[in-house]
Image 1 (cartoon, rainbow over the protein chains, first blue to last red):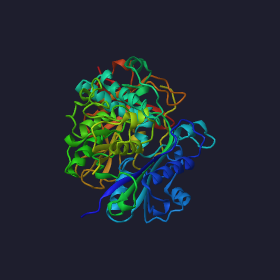
Image 2 (cartoon, rainbow over the protein chains, first blue to last red):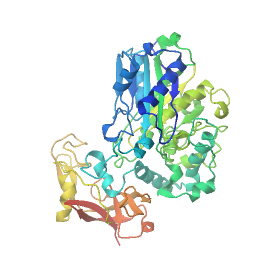
Image 3 (tube, chains in turn purple, blue):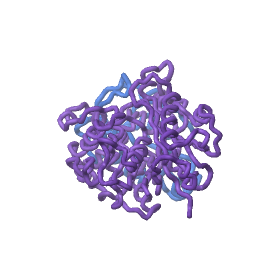
Image 4 (cartoon, rainbow over the protein chains, first blue to last red):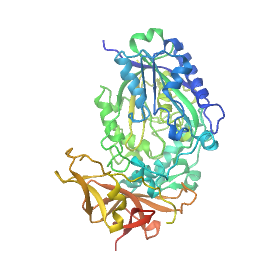
Length: 386
Length: 134
């Protein structure tokens, strides 16, 4: 039988804003928790994967590289990756799954550490990104026009949905409302209270149609999952969750030249890589750095037709914890914090193990989809419990 | 808008795009072999992989494909709100330009509005902005 890949451990540091604990300290907290959760020791880890790797020009975005983890943990690795041009954040986990299936490693630490809030607060230690000098590469096509943020790029796809398909702000609001409702049940989430539609509608605009609550905010945290090969599962003490399929497809590698976000080709291709179908899915963890992105994933993965995603979420009942397709059960990035993709894999595992506590989806869920990315970046994982 | 726009580092691929406004022209890379347009400008045609690609002056007219009204001051000197739009060009199929729609109230912009290029120069860079036509 072919070797399979499983998530066998999950861990997370404190999640906060302007934390003083160091990025490596947070990363070690999450690694220790994940390794213990898997019932492993660091001596059994032989691979490391991260996204995007240490980013010297913008340390808050990614302050820790593969090298620091290998050194700090005293690892002797056989395989690693830390690639900014991977298929979005969860691409690091998809690549680790491919590596263990190929026999290149047995147990891989996959981590994502973010430190943007602390870095903003301590510019002398973490020099801010220079956006207006010697601009080159892809940012030259957007930043001269004041489109510094992915909020402005993603907002334009949302406006198109409003104009072409009739999406309303009240419909879009259901992403943030659902995230806040679920985050309030998640002790690790930044958000502690539900959000009312009135408060949402009255919030200041960032880039239309996105208001403050439609945009994730800088967070300091580290998230870890351990990916293990099926032939070493007897070394593991947790309930393993299988990575049954992965996808990361791109049609135009550009934020503004693409007709459709990469969620669409990636969603279609995920089902080509498995015998499961959208109808088998019990819950979804959809990237929501900006509130419109889950709508693209709903449509791209075929949970509804293209142009129908906003009607699918209308009123919020279908995506609620007790709905037909519970979404972002831990609060997503709008509620939990900007864990930058890895939180969706973490929460998918929590739910499939039945460890969600107050936010646990009922009915013994067995199949989940976790996604990350927006615009030209996209990665999707199909997670199942055997 | 008077705020300081991002200063571009010019190179052989992007120079015509960012300086064409000095002669009132909007240049988009076009393949001399297959005729396909390529944006962002690069040395290989994405349609046929020819290296016979060169800047081609287009009409500078198009339509608003989609847009957003930006309210957030991403830089302290930014004057908000303003419109960020994605414009599709009439005579360069498949090419979109991220730009600003200027010369009208932000509420006056809608998808499919016909627009034409106007250039704003700062420090030798000619930024192609668009204004509504008619």
